[in-house]
Structure formats: C-alpha cells, structure tokens
Image (tube, rainbow, N blue to C red; front, side, top):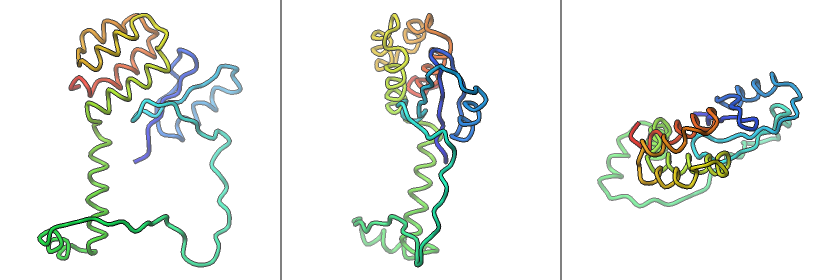
Length: 173
C-alpha cells in the first residue's frame, strides 16, 4: 500500500493522496512562490519528494537483480515449524504472507499511540505557534477529544481539520 501524503502551502491545505496525486496537484498550482510542505499521514512527519518526475531507470546489468535480501534468524517452537511445513510455498513464503497481512492491517487503522504521535508531529510543524497548541498536545495525549477540539477550533481550517483527522484514531474515532 502506497503512503498517503498531505500538502500545505502556508495555512492552505492543497491536497491529500498518494505521491502521484500530490505531484499532479502541485503541478496544477504552477510556479507559485508559496513554499509547500508535505507530510506523511502515517507519521505526521514532514517529507520531501522529487517533483521533477519519476527517476529514469538505468539499464539492468547481467544476472539476478539485487533484492536487498538479508539473512535473519527467527526462533520458533517445533509446532510452529510443523505448521509452516504444511503451508503452500514453504516457510519463507508463509512468513512473508503473514507479515504483509499484519502490515496491511496496521495501515488500515493506526494504533491510538501512532495516531497521537502523527498528530503531534504534524501539529508541531504547522500549529506550534498557534494559541492553545501546548494545551492541545496535552489534551491529545490525555485522550480528551472535546478539549482537543475546543483548543484547536480557532486554528486555520486546513490545519485544524487535518490535525483532527490524524488524531481521530487516538480518541477511538
């Protein structure tokens, strides 16, 4: 699953989407003088993307491609190895499928702590100088949604709404 990004130009929300959608939205803006900040919605951290377009692939060399595979060790009980032996594709393929399924489940709904941290990182960058910022952070980590919403009410709408959307899983929403 591709990461979701959100772009802001100053206080103005520009777009939310995958990297291709963000590129298209920023291209539609033209050569605006406004600085654009991009945030990874999973972490709330500011990110950079190369707006010149996708990199041109260099011609492949001979032989098998390097996949970045590193040998690691895991310790399983004999009953785990017995179960893995019965799975189609063998132990490695089964473990990969299980890990991918777990990763997908994690990205569908972030944990409350991950949501708090993402909202914190975003708010620090975009609302750190806003009235009520510090109290809003305390309300976020105290899981006090009503106070959080009250303290962020007067922030610019794009910043307020995105902070609330990132924080929602922390409050059970």
